[in-house]
Image (cartoon, rainbow, N blue to C red; front, side, top):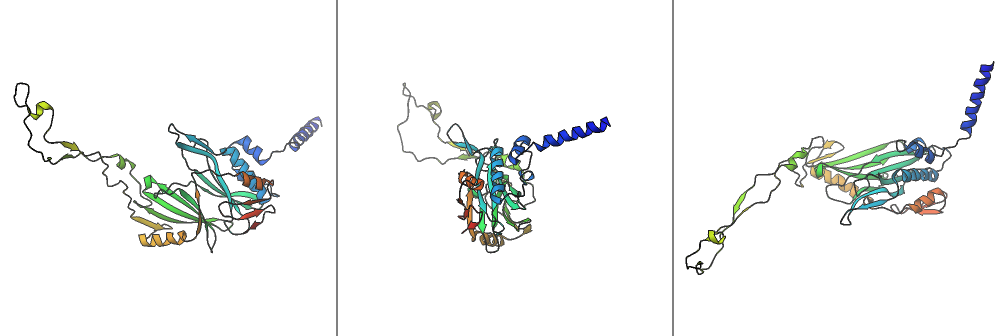
Length: 329
């Protein structure tokens, strides 16, 4: 009997203890650290989409920090970290926007955002539906993420570049509310599945010696020493013919020379003209490019999502969102 009473007493104390505990999603993230997926804790079913996205923005701010630039000796920006930008984009055209965020960790070695994430409001939760690591493409374009509006649905475009520009792709993502689909256009100096020998770039060609043509000279009085004897060129330190060695150059068949020879659409080989036609079909759509190297003021979006601002105009799509969480054109 005494044993049963003790067990009941302990259970009562445990229930009382946990009943008095209350952890918000942000508190839980801060307790557990970066290993916790935000979607695993942002699951309060009564949240509206602004409230759910407000928690995501808060969590990402705690995880990555505010936008910061690190400069080198010559006052040149060597790295950037924190939350670069955030915005709203109705990716699946269902009337409720998705939230996208660009960020880099505090140990970032890049001047551009290293992470691009998209969250969707599903069943009262902010669920991550896309996680990307954009890369500067071979044409040195600054913008490697694009928000594209199409009659058939909205698209998010992300560019990648690998192996010093020898391998590249443009990935175009669509979202139907349940799953994300990707159309990939690959172009490169090597086949998509081929390995690249990076050591080839470090090999150099044998040095070449070039003899320059003799310059035309006019007759001059012979050079003599103090005794009147002629002095040879060797003795004066002058040379009759000049030779020079060509600068060390890279010469390897594996070295990228800016000419692409491999093209594919959705994993199927195609010609350059077919590739360009497909790419131009995307480029002809209404597109807004995001500069991944610049930070943006996200305080207005944060204020709107938290309920302290009556409306928000997205700088990327131009859409105005009112406090009742309905979008206006």
